[in-house]
Length: 154
Image (cartoon, rainbow, N blue to C red; front, side, top):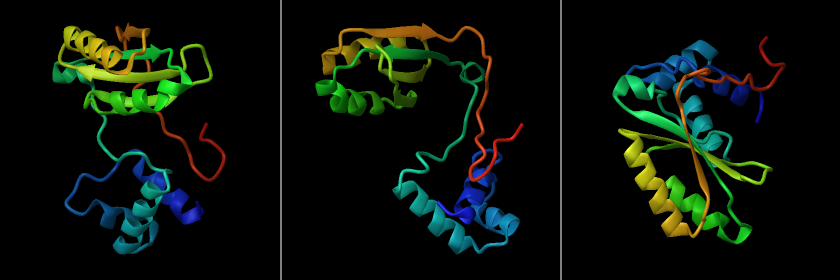
Protein backbone atom coordinates (compact mmCIF):
# COMPACT_ATOMS: atom_id res chain seq x y z
CA UNK A 1 0.00 0.00 0.00
CA UNK A 2 1.54 3.29 -1.04
CA UNK A 3 0.87 6.80 0.33
CA UNK A 4 -1.98 7.44 -2.10
CA UNK A 5 -3.70 4.17 -1.14
CA UNK A 6 -3.27 5.08 2.53
CA UNK A 7 -4.76 8.53 1.94
CA UNK A 8 -7.77 6.97 0.20
CA UNK A 9 -8.32 4.48 3.04
CA UNK A 10 -8.04 7.26 5.63
CA UNK A 11 -10.56 9.34 3.68
CA UNK A 12 -13.19 6.64 3.12
CA UNK A 13 -13.16 4.67 6.38
CA UNK A 14 -15.28 7.36 8.06
CA UNK A 15 -17.38 10.08 6.49
CA UNK A 16 -17.83 8.21 3.21
CA UNK A 17 -19.62 10.66 0.88
CA UNK A 18 -23.31 9.85 0.46
CA UNK A 19 -23.78 11.14 -3.05
CA UNK A 20 -24.31 9.83 -6.57
CA UNK A 21 -20.54 9.95 -7.22
CA UNK A 22 -18.79 9.36 -3.89
CA UNK A 23 -15.45 8.47 -5.49
CA UNK A 24 -15.45 11.77 -7.36
CA UNK A 25 -15.81 13.61 -4.04
CA UNK A 26 -12.93 11.58 -2.58
CA UNK A 27 -10.86 12.24 -5.70
CA UNK A 28 -11.45 15.97 -5.50
CA UNK A 29 -10.54 16.00 -1.81
CA UNK A 30 -7.24 14.20 -2.50
CA UNK A 31 -6.37 15.84 -5.82
CA UNK A 32 -6.86 12.65 -7.84
CA UNK A 33 -9.14 11.55 -10.66
CA UNK A 34 -12.31 9.62 -9.99
CA UNK A 35 -11.02 6.78 -12.20
CA UNK A 36 -7.81 6.53 -10.17
CA UNK A 37 -9.71 6.35 -6.87
CA UNK A 38 -12.05 3.67 -8.24
CA UNK A 39 -9.11 1.65 -9.61
CA UNK A 40 -7.19 1.89 -6.36
CA UNK A 41 -10.19 0.98 -4.19
CA UNK A 42 -10.82 -2.03 -6.43
CA UNK A 43 -7.18 -3.10 -6.06
CA UNK A 44 -7.32 -2.60 -2.27
CA UNK A 45 -10.42 -4.82 -2.09
CA UNK A 46 -8.87 -7.51 -4.27
CA UNK A 47 -5.67 -7.50 -2.21
CA UNK A 48 -7.63 -7.82 1.04
CA UNK A 49 -6.64 -4.43 2.45
CA UNK A 50 -10.31 -3.38 2.33
CA UNK A 51 -12.79 -6.03 3.43
CA UNK A 52 -16.02 -4.13 2.93
CA UNK A 53 -17.45 -0.74 2.21
CA UNK A 54 -20.81 -0.12 3.81
CA UNK A 55 -22.75 1.82 6.35
CA UNK A 56 -22.68 1.34 10.10
CA UNK A 57 -26.01 1.48 11.86
CA UNK A 58 -27.20 1.47 15.44
CA UNK A 59 -29.09 -1.85 15.60
CA UNK A 60 -31.41 -0.66 18.38
CA UNK A 61 -32.50 2.39 16.35
CA UNK A 62 -33.59 -0.01 13.61
CA UNK A 63 -35.46 -2.22 16.08
CA UNK A 64 -32.72 -4.87 16.15
CA UNK A 65 -30.46 -6.38 18.80
CA UNK A 66 -26.81 -7.36 18.62
CA UNK A 67 -24.56 -9.86 20.27
CA UNK A 68 -20.91 -10.80 20.38
CA UNK A 69 -20.26 -14.50 19.83
CA UNK A 70 -17.21 -16.58 20.62
CA UNK A 71 -16.59 -20.14 19.48
CA UNK A 72 -14.08 -22.93 20.02
CA UNK A 73 -13.36 -24.09 16.49
CA UNK A 74 -10.94 -26.94 15.79
CA UNK A 75 -8.51 -26.34 12.92
CA UNK A 76 -10.13 -29.03 10.79
CA UNK A 77 -13.52 -27.26 11.02
CA UNK A 78 -12.25 -23.69 10.63
CA UNK A 79 -12.86 -23.17 6.90
CA UNK A 80 -16.39 -24.58 6.98
CA UNK A 81 -17.22 -22.65 10.16
CA UNK A 82 -16.04 -19.39 8.61
CA UNK A 83 -18.08 -19.98 5.45
CA UNK A 84 -21.24 -20.92 7.36
CA UNK A 85 -21.03 -17.93 9.72
CA UNK A 86 -20.29 -15.49 6.90
CA UNK A 87 -23.38 -16.68 5.00
CA UNK A 88 -25.64 -15.03 7.61
CA UNK A 89 -26.53 -11.47 6.63
CA UNK A 90 -26.61 -10.42 10.29
CA UNK A 91 -22.91 -11.18 10.80
CA UNK A 92 -20.95 -7.95 10.66
CA UNK A 93 -17.50 -9.10 11.81
CA UNK A 94 -15.90 -12.54 11.96
CA UNK A 95 -12.30 -13.00 12.97
CA UNK A 96 -9.85 -15.45 14.49
CA UNK A 97 -8.16 -14.80 17.82
CA UNK A 98 -5.30 -16.50 19.59
CA UNK A 99 -7.41 -17.86 22.44
CA UNK A 100 -9.26 -20.97 23.58
CA UNK A 101 -12.31 -19.30 22.06
CA UNK A 102 -10.57 -18.73 18.75
CA UNK A 103 -13.34 -17.29 16.55
CA UNK A 104 -15.31 -14.17 17.44
CA UNK A 105 -18.12 -12.60 15.46
CA UNK A 106 -20.87 -10.05 15.90
CA UNK A 107 -24.45 -10.80 14.96
CA UNK A 108 -27.35 -8.40 14.46
CA UNK A 109 -30.98 -9.54 14.08
CA UNK A 110 -34.54 -8.39 14.78
CA UNK A 111 -34.70 -10.41 18.03
CA UNK A 112 -32.61 -12.34 20.54
CA UNK A 113 -34.68 -15.42 19.64
CA UNK A 114 -33.63 -15.14 15.99
CA UNK A 115 -29.99 -14.87 17.02
CA UNK A 116 -30.33 -17.94 19.28
CA UNK A 117 -31.97 -19.91 16.45
CA UNK A 118 -29.21 -18.88 14.02
CA UNK A 119 -26.49 -19.88 16.49
CA UNK A 120 -28.17 -23.28 16.90
CA UNK A 121 -28.21 -23.64 13.09
CA UNK A 122 -24.53 -22.72 12.90
CA UNK A 123 -23.68 -25.34 15.53
CA UNK A 124 -25.70 -27.98 13.67
CA UNK A 125 -24.21 -27.13 10.26
CA UNK A 126 -20.60 -27.03 11.48
CA UNK A 127 -20.42 -29.51 14.32
CA UNK A 128 -18.87 -26.82 16.55
CA UNK A 129 -20.22 -27.55 20.00
CA UNK A 130 -19.70 -24.33 21.94
CA UNK A 131 -20.68 -20.84 20.80
CA UNK A 132 -20.92 -18.21 23.51
CA UNK A 133 -23.72 -15.68 23.03
CA UNK A 134 -22.79 -12.39 24.76
CA UNK A 135 -25.65 -9.95 24.06
CA UNK A 136 -24.92 -6.24 23.93
CA UNK A 137 -26.69 -4.44 26.75
CA UNK A 138 -24.91 -1.07 26.51
CA UNK A 139 -22.96 0.55 23.68
CA UNK A 140 -19.49 1.69 24.75
CA UNK A 141 -17.83 2.15 21.36
CA UNK A 142 -19.58 3.11 18.17
CA UNK A 143 -16.75 2.93 15.66
CA UNK A 144 -13.05 2.56 15.23
CA UNK A 145 -10.89 4.53 12.86
CA UNK A 146 -7.32 3.54 12.18
CA UNK A 147 -4.93 6.03 10.63
CA UNK A 148 -3.16 4.22 7.81
CA UNK A 149 0.36 5.09 6.71
CA UNK A 150 1.55 7.08 9.70
CA UNK A 151 1.32 7.57 13.43
CA UNK A 152 -2.04 6.92 15.02
CA UNK A 153 -4.21 9.89 15.83
CA UNK A 154 -4.28 10.91 19.47
